[in-house]
Length: 395
Picture 1 (cartoon, rainbow, N blue to C red):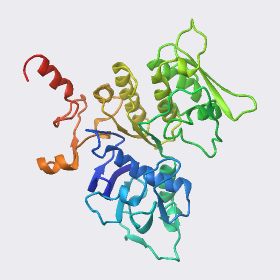
Picture 2 (cartoon, helix red, strand yellow; picture 1 turned 45 degrees about the horizontal axis):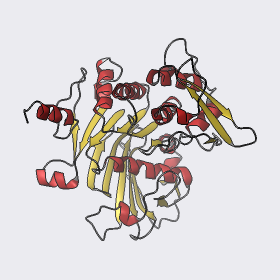
Picture 3 (cartoon, one colour; picture 1 turned 30 degrees about the vertical axis):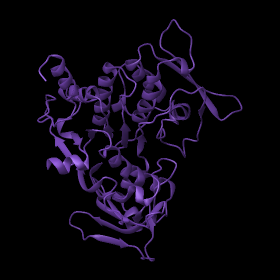
Picture 4 (cartoon, rainbow, N blue to C red; picture 1 turned 90 degrees about the vertical axis):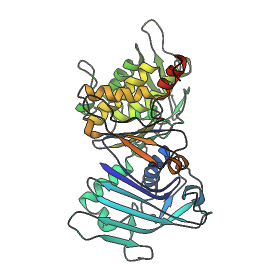
Protein backbone atom coordinates (compact mmCIF):
# COMPACT_ATOMS: atom_id res chain seq x y z
CA UNK A 1 0.00 0.00 0.00
CA UNK A 2 1.20 3.53 -0.78
CA UNK A 3 1.41 5.38 2.54
CA UNK A 4 2.75 8.79 1.45
CA UNK A 5 3.37 10.80 -1.68
CA UNK A 6 5.83 13.67 -1.95
CA UNK A 7 5.91 16.17 -4.82
CA UNK A 8 8.63 18.73 -5.38
CA UNK A 9 8.39 21.33 -8.15
CA UNK A 10 5.45 19.44 -9.72
CA UNK A 11 2.67 21.50 -11.29
CA UNK A 12 1.14 23.75 -8.57
CA UNK A 13 3.19 22.23 -5.75
CA UNK A 14 6.60 23.55 -4.79
CA UNK A 15 6.76 21.01 -1.98
CA UNK A 16 4.02 18.64 -0.84
CA UNK A 17 4.08 15.66 1.51
CA UNK A 18 0.71 13.90 1.72
CA UNK A 19 -0.08 10.75 3.74
CA UNK A 20 -2.24 8.30 1.76
CA UNK A 21 -4.67 6.02 3.59
CA UNK A 22 -6.67 2.95 2.72
CA UNK A 23 -9.38 5.41 1.57
CA UNK A 24 -8.29 8.96 0.78
CA UNK A 25 -10.68 11.77 -0.18
CA UNK A 26 -9.36 14.87 -1.94
CA UNK A 27 -11.63 17.93 -1.91
CA UNK A 28 -11.37 21.66 -2.51
CA UNK A 29 -12.07 24.37 -5.06
CA UNK A 30 -11.36 23.79 -8.74
CA UNK A 31 -7.76 24.08 -9.97
CA UNK A 32 -6.18 23.59 -6.54
CA UNK A 33 -4.09 20.50 -7.31
CA UNK A 34 -6.31 17.54 -6.43
CA UNK A 35 -5.99 15.92 -9.83
CA UNK A 36 -2.27 16.72 -9.89
CA UNK A 37 -1.70 14.35 -6.97
CA UNK A 38 -3.37 11.57 -8.94
CA UNK A 39 -1.52 12.47 -12.13
CA UNK A 40 1.86 12.06 -10.45
CA UNK A 41 0.94 8.46 -9.64
CA UNK A 42 -0.48 7.91 -13.12
CA UNK A 43 2.75 9.16 -14.75
CA UNK A 44 4.75 6.53 -12.87
CA UNK A 45 2.19 3.86 -13.74
CA UNK A 46 2.11 4.86 -17.40
CA UNK A 47 5.88 4.63 -17.82
CA UNK A 48 6.18 1.35 -15.89
CA UNK A 49 3.29 -0.16 -17.86
CA UNK A 50 4.34 0.92 -21.34
CA UNK A 51 8.17 1.08 -21.20
CA UNK A 52 9.84 -1.53 -18.99
CA UNK A 53 13.46 -0.46 -19.59
CA UNK A 54 13.01 3.27 -20.11
CA UNK A 55 15.14 5.94 -18.44
CA UNK A 56 12.52 8.54 -19.34
CA UNK A 57 9.32 9.51 -17.54
CA UNK A 58 6.63 9.37 -20.22
CA UNK A 59 4.51 12.55 -20.02
CA UNK A 60 2.31 11.54 -22.94
CA UNK A 61 1.02 8.01 -23.32
CA UNK A 62 -2.13 5.95 -23.81
CA UNK A 63 -3.39 6.73 -20.30
CA UNK A 64 -2.43 10.37 -19.70
CA UNK A 65 -1.20 13.25 -21.82
CA UNK A 66 0.27 16.23 -19.96
CA UNK A 67 2.18 18.00 -22.73
CA UNK A 68 5.69 19.35 -22.24
CA UNK A 69 8.09 19.69 -19.34
CA UNK A 70 7.15 23.37 -18.93
CA UNK A 71 3.53 22.24 -18.39
CA UNK A 72 4.32 19.96 -15.46
CA UNK A 73 7.14 21.78 -13.67
CA UNK A 74 6.12 24.23 -10.90
CA UNK A 75 4.88 27.30 -12.75
CA UNK A 76 6.37 30.19 -10.69
CA UNK A 77 9.80 28.76 -11.49
CA UNK A 78 9.98 29.91 -15.10
CA UNK A 79 13.40 28.44 -15.80
CA UNK A 80 13.35 25.23 -13.78
CA UNK A 81 13.43 21.94 -15.63
CA UNK A 82 13.63 19.54 -12.69
CA UNK A 83 11.03 17.92 -10.45
CA UNK A 84 10.79 14.97 -8.08
CA UNK A 85 8.19 12.40 -7.03
CA UNK A 86 8.63 10.43 -3.80
CA UNK A 87 6.56 7.50 -2.57
CA UNK A 88 6.49 5.71 0.75
CA UNK A 89 5.31 2.15 0.26
CA UNK A 90 4.44 -0.58 2.75
CA UNK A 91 6.70 -3.02 0.87
CA UNK A 92 9.44 -1.06 -0.90
CA UNK A 93 9.49 1.73 1.74
CA UNK A 94 11.01 5.05 0.57
CA UNK A 95 11.60 5.70 -3.13
CA UNK A 96 12.34 9.11 -4.65
CA UNK A 97 12.80 9.93 -8.32
CA UNK A 98 14.36 13.14 -9.61
CA UNK A 99 13.58 13.98 -13.24
CA UNK A 100 15.17 16.62 -15.49
CA UNK A 101 14.86 17.73 -19.12
CA UNK A 102 14.72 20.82 -21.27
CA UNK A 103 11.44 22.69 -20.91
CA UNK A 104 10.15 22.08 -24.44
CA UNK A 105 10.67 18.29 -24.24
CA UNK A 106 7.75 15.81 -23.99
CA UNK A 107 9.45 13.42 -21.57
CA UNK A 108 11.84 13.73 -18.63
CA UNK A 109 15.08 11.87 -18.02
CA UNK A 110 15.61 10.08 -14.73
CA UNK A 111 18.41 12.00 -13.04
CA UNK A 112 18.46 10.07 -9.76
CA UNK A 113 16.62 7.33 -7.90
CA UNK A 114 16.99 7.02 -4.13
CA UNK A 115 15.73 3.97 -2.30
CA UNK A 116 15.93 3.25 1.39
CA UNK A 117 14.47 0.56 3.63
CA UNK A 118 14.60 0.56 7.46
CA UNK A 119 17.98 -0.49 8.92
CA UNK A 120 19.55 -0.49 5.45
CA UNK A 121 21.88 1.95 3.78
CA UNK A 122 20.42 4.34 1.23
CA UNK A 123 20.80 3.13 -2.34
CA UNK A 124 21.29 5.71 -5.07
CA UNK A 125 21.15 5.34 -8.84
CA UNK A 126 22.39 8.36 -10.79
CA UNK A 127 22.15 9.43 -14.40
CA UNK A 128 25.17 8.21 -16.29
CA UNK A 129 25.45 4.95 -14.34
CA UNK A 130 25.79 2.65 -17.35
CA UNK A 131 26.55 -0.48 -15.32
CA UNK A 132 23.14 -0.55 -13.60
CA UNK A 133 20.04 -0.58 -15.74
CA UNK A 134 16.65 0.80 -14.77
CA UNK A 135 13.74 -1.58 -14.96
CA UNK A 136 10.29 -0.06 -14.35
CA UNK A 137 12.07 3.20 -13.42
CA UNK A 138 13.92 1.37 -10.62
CA UNK A 139 17.45 -0.04 -10.25
CA UNK A 140 17.50 -3.72 -11.18
CA UNK A 141 18.57 -4.78 -7.70
CA UNK A 142 15.30 -3.35 -6.38
CA UNK A 143 13.05 -4.90 -9.03
CA UNK A 144 14.63 -8.30 -8.34
CA UNK A 145 13.77 -8.10 -4.64
CA UNK A 146 10.48 -9.38 -3.23
CA UNK A 147 9.53 -5.92 -1.99
CA UNK A 148 10.39 -4.34 -5.32
CA UNK A 149 8.35 -6.88 -7.28
CA UNK A 150 5.29 -6.22 -5.12
CA UNK A 151 5.68 -2.47 -5.54
CA UNK A 152 6.04 -2.74 -9.32
CA UNK A 153 3.01 -5.02 -9.51
CA UNK A 154 0.98 -2.47 -7.52
CA UNK A 155 2.01 0.48 -9.69
CA UNK A 156 1.65 -1.32 -13.03
CA UNK A 157 -1.79 -2.56 -11.96
CA UNK A 158 -2.96 0.91 -10.91
CA UNK A 159 -6.39 1.87 -12.26
CA UNK A 160 -7.27 5.51 -12.91
CA UNK A 161 -10.78 6.65 -13.81
CA UNK A 162 -10.67 10.26 -14.95
CA UNK A 163 -13.44 12.82 -14.57
CA UNK A 164 -14.10 12.58 -18.31
CA UNK A 165 -15.64 9.12 -18.52
CA UNK A 166 -17.12 7.75 -21.71
CA UNK A 167 -20.87 8.02 -22.17
CA UNK A 168 -23.24 5.40 -23.62
CA UNK A 169 -22.12 3.68 -26.83
CA UNK A 170 -23.79 1.28 -29.25
CA UNK A 171 -20.57 -0.72 -29.57
CA UNK A 172 -17.54 -1.21 -27.31
CA UNK A 173 -14.05 -2.25 -28.41
CA UNK A 174 -13.03 -5.71 -27.18
CA UNK A 175 -9.42 -6.07 -26.04
CA UNK A 176 -7.20 -8.97 -24.99
CA UNK A 177 -7.47 -9.12 -21.19
CA UNK A 178 -3.85 -10.30 -20.97
CA UNK A 179 -2.68 -6.92 -22.25
CA UNK A 180 -5.49 -4.61 -21.13
CA UNK A 181 -6.17 -5.41 -17.49
CA UNK A 182 -7.61 -2.02 -16.45
CA UNK A 183 -10.99 -0.55 -17.37
CA UNK A 184 -9.28 2.46 -18.98
CA UNK A 185 -9.10 6.11 -17.87
CA UNK A 186 -12.48 6.83 -19.49
CA UNK A 187 -14.01 3.46 -18.60
CA UNK A 188 -13.71 2.53 -22.27
CA UNK A 189 -12.65 -1.07 -21.56
CA UNK A 190 -15.17 -1.88 -18.82
CA UNK A 191 -17.47 -3.80 -21.18
CA UNK A 192 -14.48 -5.60 -22.70
CA UNK A 193 -13.37 -6.69 -19.23
CA UNK A 194 -16.87 -7.96 -18.45
CA UNK A 195 -16.90 -9.92 -21.70
CA UNK A 196 -13.45 -11.51 -21.26
CA UNK A 197 -13.39 -12.13 -17.49
CA UNK A 198 -17.04 -11.91 -16.48
CA UNK A 199 -17.26 -15.62 -15.61
CA UNK A 200 -14.33 -15.53 -13.21
CA UNK A 201 -15.09 -15.59 -9.48
CA UNK A 202 -14.27 -12.44 -7.52
CA UNK A 203 -12.74 -12.32 -4.06
CA UNK A 204 -15.04 -13.34 -1.20
CA UNK A 205 -14.49 -10.04 0.60
CA UNK A 206 -16.07 -8.22 -2.36
CA UNK A 207 -19.20 -10.36 -2.67
CA UNK A 208 -22.38 -8.29 -2.69
CA UNK A 209 -24.82 -10.41 -0.70
CA UNK A 210 -26.04 -13.95 -0.12
CA UNK A 211 -27.91 -15.56 -2.99
CA UNK A 212 -25.95 -13.83 -5.76
CA UNK A 213 -23.50 -15.83 -7.85
CA UNK A 214 -19.77 -15.22 -7.24
CA UNK A 215 -18.74 -14.34 -10.80
CA UNK A 216 -17.70 -10.85 -11.82
CA UNK A 217 -20.65 -10.31 -14.16
CA UNK A 218 -23.20 -11.52 -11.58
CA UNK A 219 -21.72 -9.36 -8.84
CA UNK A 220 -21.48 -6.28 -11.07
CA UNK A 221 -25.14 -6.68 -11.95
CA UNK A 222 -26.08 -7.09 -8.26
CA UNK A 223 -24.18 -3.94 -7.27
CA UNK A 224 -25.64 -1.97 -10.19
CA UNK A 225 -29.13 -2.96 -9.00
CA UNK A 226 -28.45 -1.04 -5.78
CA UNK A 227 -27.90 2.14 -7.77
CA UNK A 228 -30.46 1.42 -10.50
CA UNK A 229 -33.33 -0.81 -9.24
CA UNK A 230 -34.29 -3.53 -11.70
CA UNK A 231 -30.98 -3.31 -13.53
CA UNK A 232 -30.18 -6.29 -15.78
CA UNK A 233 -27.49 -6.43 -18.46
CA UNK A 234 -26.19 -8.62 -21.24
CA UNK A 235 -22.73 -8.47 -22.84
CA UNK A 236 -22.38 -10.04 -26.29
CA UNK A 237 -19.76 -10.01 -29.03
CA UNK A 238 -20.75 -8.86 -32.50
CA UNK A 239 -20.18 -11.68 -34.97
CA UNK A 240 -17.05 -11.27 -37.14
CA UNK A 241 -16.14 -7.99 -35.44
CA UNK A 242 -13.87 -7.21 -32.52
CA UNK A 243 -16.56 -5.24 -30.71
CA UNK A 244 -19.19 -5.97 -28.10
CA UNK A 245 -22.73 -4.87 -27.35
CA UNK A 246 -24.10 -3.95 -23.94
CA UNK A 247 -27.80 -4.54 -23.41
CA UNK A 248 -29.48 -2.87 -20.42
CA UNK A 249 -32.90 -2.84 -18.85
CA UNK A 250 -34.10 -1.34 -15.57
CA UNK A 251 -37.52 -2.97 -15.32
CA UNK A 252 -38.74 -6.56 -15.73
CA UNK A 253 -41.59 -5.20 -17.88
CA UNK A 254 -39.22 -3.81 -20.50
CA UNK A 255 -37.02 -5.35 -23.15
CA UNK A 256 -33.26 -4.71 -23.32
CA UNK A 257 -32.28 -1.27 -24.55
CA UNK A 258 -29.19 0.18 -26.08
CA UNK A 259 -27.21 2.09 -23.40
CA UNK A 260 -28.12 5.40 -25.09
CA UNK A 261 -31.77 4.84 -24.11
CA UNK A 262 -31.05 4.42 -20.39
CA UNK A 263 -29.98 6.84 -17.68
CA UNK A 264 -26.61 8.49 -18.34
CA UNK A 265 -25.46 7.59 -14.83
CA UNK A 266 -25.30 3.90 -15.79
CA UNK A 267 -22.34 4.49 -18.11
CA UNK A 268 -20.57 6.47 -15.37
CA UNK A 269 -21.07 3.99 -12.53
CA UNK A 270 -20.46 0.74 -14.44
CA UNK A 271 -16.67 1.27 -14.89
CA UNK A 272 -16.29 2.02 -11.17
CA UNK A 273 -18.10 -1.17 -10.15
CA UNK A 274 -16.12 -3.26 -12.65
CA UNK A 275 -12.81 -1.72 -11.56
CA UNK A 276 -13.49 -2.30 -7.86
CA UNK A 277 -14.78 -5.87 -8.15
CA UNK A 278 -11.96 -6.96 -10.48
CA UNK A 279 -9.23 -5.38 -8.36
CA UNK A 280 -6.45 -7.52 -6.94
CA UNK A 281 -5.79 -7.56 -3.18
CA UNK A 282 -3.99 -4.35 -2.20
CA UNK A 283 -4.70 -2.88 -5.63
CA UNK A 284 -4.58 0.90 -6.15
CA UNK A 285 -7.62 2.65 -7.61
CA UNK A 286 -7.86 6.39 -8.39
CA UNK A 287 -11.31 7.82 -9.15
CA UNK A 288 -12.25 11.37 -10.08
CA UNK A 289 -15.84 12.48 -9.44
CA UNK A 290 -17.27 9.07 -8.47
CA UNK A 291 -20.73 10.59 -7.90
CA UNK A 292 -21.11 12.28 -11.29
CA UNK A 293 -24.59 11.98 -12.88
CA UNK A 294 -25.99 10.29 -9.76
CA UNK A 295 -28.96 11.36 -7.67
CA UNK A 296 -27.89 12.54 -4.16
CA UNK A 297 -29.01 9.21 -2.69
CA UNK A 298 -26.86 7.40 -5.27
CA UNK A 299 -23.90 9.63 -4.47
CA UNK A 300 -24.16 8.75 -0.79
CA UNK A 301 -24.46 5.09 -1.72
CA UNK A 302 -21.33 5.42 -3.85
CA UNK A 303 -19.44 6.76 -0.83
CA UNK A 304 -20.53 3.73 1.21
CA UNK A 305 -19.63 1.35 -1.61
CA UNK A 306 -16.12 2.76 -1.96
CA UNK A 307 -15.59 2.73 1.81
CA UNK A 308 -16.58 -0.95 1.95
CA UNK A 309 -14.29 -1.69 -1.01
CA UNK A 310 -11.40 -0.01 0.82
CA UNK A 311 -12.17 -2.21 3.80
CA UNK A 312 -11.76 -5.21 1.45
CA UNK A 313 -8.05 -4.42 0.98
CA UNK A 314 -8.28 -2.10 -2.02
CA UNK A 315 -6.52 1.24 -1.69
CA UNK A 316 -8.77 3.97 -3.11
CA UNK A 317 -8.07 7.65 -3.72
CA UNK A 318 -11.05 9.75 -4.79
CA UNK A 319 -11.44 13.36 -5.85
CA UNK A 320 -14.91 14.76 -5.31
CA UNK A 321 -17.00 17.91 -4.92
CA UNK A 322 -19.94 15.92 -3.53
CA UNK A 323 -20.85 16.25 0.13
CA UNK A 324 -23.14 13.25 -0.41
CA UNK A 325 -20.16 11.03 -1.31
CA UNK A 326 -18.40 12.28 1.83
CA UNK A 327 -21.47 11.56 3.95
CA UNK A 328 -21.72 8.06 2.48
CA UNK A 329 -18.17 7.43 3.69
CA UNK A 330 -19.09 8.80 7.12
CA UNK A 331 -22.11 6.49 7.26
CA UNK A 332 -19.93 3.48 6.39
CA UNK A 333 -17.51 4.39 9.18
CA UNK A 334 -20.31 4.73 11.72
CA UNK A 335 -21.66 1.33 10.62
CA UNK A 336 -18.23 -0.17 11.29
CA UNK A 337 -17.57 -0.99 7.65
CA UNK A 338 -14.32 1.01 7.53
CA UNK A 339 -12.04 2.15 10.32
CA UNK A 340 -11.78 5.90 10.81
CA UNK A 341 -8.02 5.49 11.19
CA UNK A 342 -7.85 4.13 7.63
CA UNK A 343 -9.59 7.18 6.17
CA UNK A 344 -7.86 10.38 5.07
CA UNK A 345 -9.73 13.62 4.31
CA UNK A 346 -7.94 16.55 2.66
CA UNK A 347 -8.99 20.05 1.65
CA UNK A 348 -6.96 21.80 -1.08
CA UNK A 349 -6.50 25.55 -1.38
CA UNK A 350 -4.98 27.41 -4.29
CA UNK A 351 -1.38 28.49 -3.88
CA UNK A 352 -2.57 32.13 -3.85
CA UNK A 353 -5.19 31.49 -1.14
CA UNK A 354 -2.67 29.66 1.01
CA UNK A 355 -0.13 32.49 0.70
CA UNK A 356 -2.70 35.20 1.51
CA UNK A 357 -4.18 33.38 4.52
CA UNK A 358 -0.93 31.96 5.86
CA UNK A 359 -2.57 28.52 5.92
CA UNK A 360 -1.34 25.25 4.45
CA UNK A 361 -2.03 24.58 0.78
CA UNK A 362 -3.47 21.20 1.81
CA UNK A 363 -5.25 20.78 5.14
CA UNK A 364 -6.05 17.47 6.81
CA UNK A 365 -9.24 16.71 8.75
CA UNK A 366 -9.68 13.96 11.34
CA UNK A 367 -12.75 11.73 11.40
CA UNK A 368 -13.78 9.56 14.37
CA UNK A 369 -15.59 6.23 14.67
CA UNK A 370 -18.96 8.01 14.77
CA UNK A 371 -18.29 9.70 11.44
CA UNK A 372 -17.77 13.11 13.05
CA UNK A 373 -15.15 15.43 11.50
CA UNK A 374 -13.05 17.54 13.86
CA UNK A 375 -12.76 20.73 11.81
CA UNK A 376 -14.43 22.17 8.74
CA UNK A 377 -12.23 24.63 6.83
CA UNK A 378 -14.02 27.42 5.00
CA UNK A 379 -15.00 25.95 1.63
CA UNK A 380 -15.04 22.33 2.80
CA UNK A 381 -18.54 21.15 1.80
CA UNK A 382 -20.18 24.14 3.49
CA UNK A 383 -22.05 25.73 0.59
CA UNK A 384 -25.43 24.30 1.66
CA UNK A 385 -25.07 25.98 5.06
CA UNK A 386 -24.18 29.29 3.41
CA UNK A 387 -27.15 29.10 1.05
CA UNK A 388 -29.61 28.17 3.82
CA UNK A 389 -28.30 30.97 6.04
CA UNK A 390 -28.84 33.42 3.19
CA UNK A 391 -32.38 32.18 2.49
CA UNK A 392 -33.24 32.37 6.19
CA UNK A 393 -31.98 35.96 6.29
CA UNK A 394 -29.08 35.13 8.63
CA UNK A 395 -26.36 36.06 6.17
